[in-house]
Length: 562
Image 1 (cartoon, helix red, strand yellow):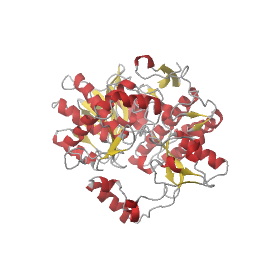
Image 2 (cartoon, rainbow, N blue to C red):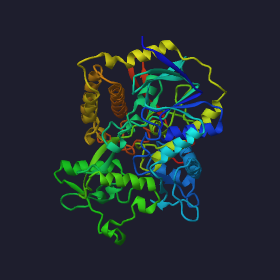
Image 3 (cartoon, one colour):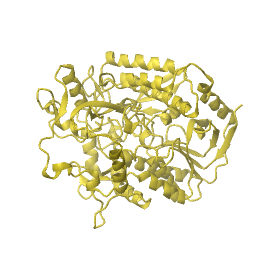
Image 4 (cartoon, helix red, strand yellow):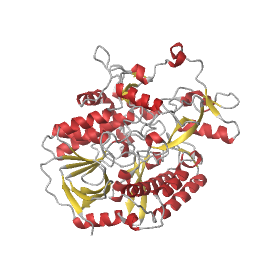
């Protein structure tokens, strides 16, 4: 029998990205005596997505727009009446508070000489700020000063429950395979979204927390909205934000006008559909044409992020990349790259899941919170909402945890359940000649990546994706690993299969088109029958699908046709 190392804490936070660190910091400030433990499979401060992208924060100039006005815009233009309007109101109203929190934790949020934040307007309702890419490193340093504990290079195996309540988790070291049973009064998942390892910038989103919550019995919501794709340059796969407004086919026709008559807040699924139709009809390739460059852009001197905002860490990071020998791709031929961003763990306004004692924040529960509505999240068609939603969810969760805190955790985890978790976890180490994790993931990618299967959907085309998911599911039963990192990859491959299965089963149920979700065989938004959330949950005989009515009657903004 494998040795089980016992660990005890008051609050266990799984995931050391921006959401997990923000939750730990805010809780520790509220309850200084609480023993808060952060478990991270990589290294907290370097993990997650906040320090890998542009570092953009959504900003609301609350002196020119009210939370009520933005909620109205979001419900009608983005969330398609599927978003939680009460939660969105709170998110907008606490915008400045969240930024001030980040500054207090040592994060470099650029300001002007007069002390106000350096803001760039991006549309009629929102603006954005760029934060430096060392955001999570600074937050970790502050957390260590407050006495928050860390277990790095330690991957979660399972959520432990007793009488239907989360009481801890099992985990293992990816360095030496040591196994841990961690007892906690409350457990927080801050483990990121499911991105299927297709886009490199998003590849840290492996969905392992989503899978663990599902196995523990937690409900999932909006799993069908985990199909985000971004226009990228064909040669380099570098994304082009807002490029959908400048799309031209091989005939020189401006094809953007075929799907929208105004500048979009961010990429819409209809832009992906238009690319698909143009290519299918022989009118490709599709290029972008932004017109003549502005005078300040001559010689490459345009207002990029490093020039607009003071981001010394980001400058150093990008200089390192430039010196590595990478060449800049100047060809503006584009195609959609499937990214995913499935984030379906269902939570309430306090970030509580449907399993007592289990919470979920950030990218693992963004869609599940219903904040974003009928769009994949992040970015939820709002650039900068990914990082800021993680902070927002962390603060809501910390308030719930603080309220539930009653002192030192004295509970003992069930060792029988821990032993069962260990037995299941290490099975791939005992197999030989089976499949590798990359084999399983490659099949899942073939199921999810083609836009005509996962984005521009029909029952017939989805069936191709489902067939591939079933193939991956069978192959996953033979997974084998020869070291601890390979064992972690096996766990993540199983999570990818589960997420893909949830996507297709939930998509088959939703018989309409709404927001980002697009069914060619059901092309209209159906407010009379489909103001509903699709719920996924583990049942006795496998995955169970149900629906839940959106409480539109209690919200201020309603569609006109109900």
